[in-house]
Length: 204
Image 1 (cartoon, rainbow, N blue to C red):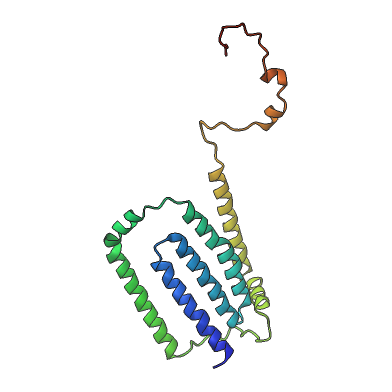
Image 2: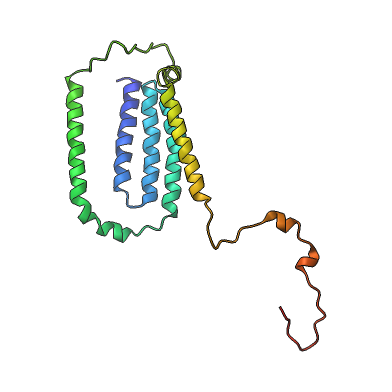
């Protein structure tokens, strides 16, 4: 048994175990931490498949951004675990139906995989084994799928602008800070010297 096979079974077993713990963990923070572990081991599997770019995306994007964002959101939420457990029975039939559909799809996928490889079209040129993974993805992304890539960028730009507009919309009844007015304010406008008589209160 070679080192690659040992590494594959190690990464795959950890991915399956950590994915199971994501579901079974009672604490949402622990679930996110198990998810991060699953992402790291999935990146190891991608390295074994010579897909270094996908592995880098898993570590940088999913672990460095998405999973950490999930962690912060879960830590900031006030989750009522008693209410979640109470609604488990009511949603169990729907969850069981979805699980059955996924199980059928998994069985069909395994059966199709055992039946043999699919016959690809002759228009798709095979990738040279000596070409690096990042170079192959870049050549395909910026040639055949260039317009789709630019359209995805425009959609993400519109989504980002929409999120900023919704966050910074004008709200009534909120006192905002006017820095220019604060800088131009003179001491005599803010302080008033009063010769207050003895035994009398201060008038505002």
